[in-house]
Length: 255
Image 1 (cartoon, rainbow, N blue to C red):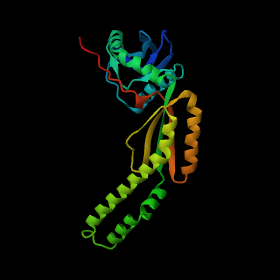
Image 2: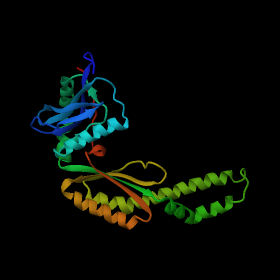
Image 3: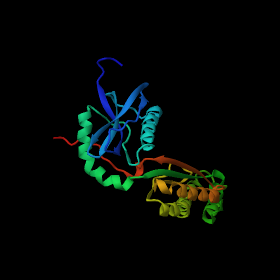
Image 4: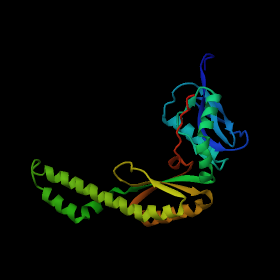
């Protein structure tokens, strides 16, 4: 690092605390950087001093950000995640941001205290999905009508067939939502579905759960997996801070 390099303050997350907590160091841009807190009332930003520049969300940087937040989560029971890449010119700027955000934090703290987020993605197995689509009477009938026709003659039927398959796939997603998502939603503090990623994904969900109910929730996920394992794959991740349930606007109000 050159002596003239301008330094800034990178923020990872906000916590509820009345102390100057210590969280050790993290490695960012190939250099060890100490994590420290910038406090206001019973709130604090967990931050590190870094070169002042735009940080690109490559795999290594994203992982560092995630690891820092997860480490803090292991020690504090009220963590508000901050999105990747927020760097400020000085500690005073971060303090102003914290003061501006405090009314939001004050409302959020009791809602997320002792809670964690887990993610569940349900991906249909290719063979099962194909079998389900092909066994659908309407799709089967349309597929038969396209078979043997010339490229030109079968064009519109193929468009219809694609649309019909999509409609049927959407009905499968709805079934999964009722059979898997709904029971888990009942056990969680809050739940939401996000847009599926990829053509085989049937569910992309996030759940906010109380740490005390984590074991019970895990058991429900395992039971659902045992029931559906021949048809779908589960991707169950966490614990995370409440990324899907916290919406913080990071703008320092201008004087």
